[in-house]
Amino acid sequence: MAYDQGQVLWGASFVPGFPGESPLWAAFHGLAQNLFHRGQRLTKSTKRVKRMDEAPEILRHIPKVEKVLAWVSGVPAIKGISRPRLVKAIREALAKLRSDLLEGALTQIPPEESLTAQVIELALGDRIPVLRPAINATGVVLHTNLGRAPLSAAALEQIRLVAGGYSTLEYDPFTGRRTDRLKAVEELLVALTGAEAAIAVNNNAAALFSLMTVLAKDRVVAISRGELVEIGGSFRLAEIVEASGVTLKEVGSTNRTLLADYRKAAERIELALILKVHASNFRQVGYASQASVAELASLAREKGLPLVVDLGSGSFIDLSGLGITDETPVQKALAQGADAVCFSGDKLLGGPQAGLIVGRKDIVGKIKTHPLTRTIRPGKLTLAALETTLRLLRDPEEAKRLIPTYRMLHLTPAELRNMALKLKKVLGPLQGLKLSLLEVSGRIGGGAAPEQPLASWAVSVESLDRPINALEEQLRQGNPPVVARIFKDRLLFDVRTIFPDQYPLLKRALTQAQGLAKAGT
Image (cartoon, rainbow, N blue to C red; front, top):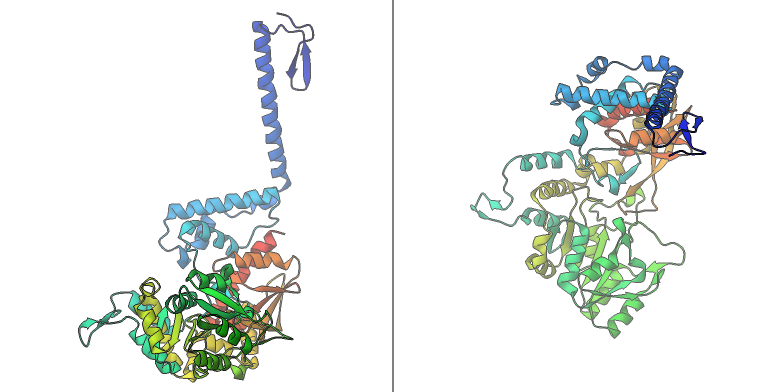
C-alpha cells in the first residue's frame, strides 16, 4: 500500500513517499525513532554537563565521605549507630548537598557544624522522638505548646526514682496494707489551702467535668455569659460542662453580670449550683464587671446552693508583689466562701499536668466514690512530681528558689540584664549577625494574667545579609528546636525562659542555623 502524501519523522526532517507496510519502510522508521530518542538523551545529558560546567569549582569542595565521618564520629548523639548506617546517612546528605548546589537552592557549602547536624538527623531517622526537649526563648513562662511549667530538680529526681523500679504507689509499708494513692497529695493540699478535703485528677478540664457530673448531672447550673471561655485546642467550657449532662443557664450580659442576675435565675429556676470561671486568656476592660466570689458565696448560702469556682491557673503564692493582681490564690477563694475550687497543676502551681479539687468534705467525698474518678486518676509519675512540688510550696521562699516557674517570675530586671550579657558573651560574634541587648516584655502564659507584661531582657539578633525569617526557621527545625520570636526584623532570645545550662546548646544551634541560612542565600 502506497501513501501519496506519506511522511516519516526523523529528527526534525520529513521523508516522503515510503510505503507504510514494506520491510524497507519499517526498518527505516525504526532507525529514525532510535536516532530521535538517542538525540533526546544526548540533549539531556548535554544540559546536565552544562550545569556541571557552570559550578565545577564549588562541587569540588564538597567534603569526602571519610572527612564527614571523622567530623561526626565523636558526637555522643550517634552512639550505638552502626558504621554502615552512618556512612549511608553521610552519602544521602552529600547527595542532597550536590543536588541543592546544582539546582540553586544553595549557593555555598554549609559549615561543618551544619553538615554534621544534617548527618546526625538522617542517621537517627525515626529514633528522634517527636516529644523532645526544646529551648524556649519566647519569654512566655507557661508556654502551653512547649509543655507549660518546667519541673523542679527535686521533682525530676523523684520521678526517676519512682519510674526506675517498684514503688509504694498504693502500699503502706507501716501497716503492710493497701492504701489510697492520693493520700499524700490530699494531705498536702489540705495543709496548703485550709480546705476540708482534696483530690487530684489528670487535668483541670477533668476536674471541672467531674464536679459537674457529681453535683449537677441532669440539672441546671448558672454561669455568667462573660465567663463562657474557650480554652486551648478550641475546647469551649460550655461544651465540656454540657457533655457532663448539665444544662447551663447563662445570666447577665457579655460585659456585665451583676449579683442580681444570679439571684433572678435562682428564684425562677431550680438550680443545682452556681459556677464561676476564671477568665482565661482574655480580659474585659471599660464598661465591664462581674460578681465577686464573696458576693456569690453569700447568695449561694442564702439559696442553699454550692458555689464552684474554676480558677484555671491556681496559685498558692500571692503574686501581687509582682504587679499580678488578676490571679486569686486558691486559699483566698476558699476563704471567700467557695464550696469547691478546681485548678491546674502545671500552670502557676509549677508542677506536672494535673487537675486539683479542694473544698468541702462531702463534695470531694462524692467525687472520690464516683465511677468516673477511676477513669481520670493520675499515674505514679504525675503523683511523684506533684507530691514533691507541693512539699516545696509549703515554704514560699524555698518555692521561689527551687521551682522554675516561681524563680523565673521573681527574676529582677538587674538579674535578667546580667543573664542577657552572659548569653551574648556565650553566643559570641558570628559572621553575618549583629548581637545586642534589648529590653523586652514577656508574658506569664497558660491563660494567667494575659494583659500583664513581664519586663525582661533579650539578646537581639539581626541578620546583615539575609531575611531573619530564614534564621528563625532553621533554629525552629533544629535539634533541639529553638523557639524564639521576631520583632522588627530582629530575632529575640528572652533570657527569662532560657536556662543557663542551655546557653551552649543555643550557641551550637545558632551557629548551625546561620550556616544553613547563609548557604541557602
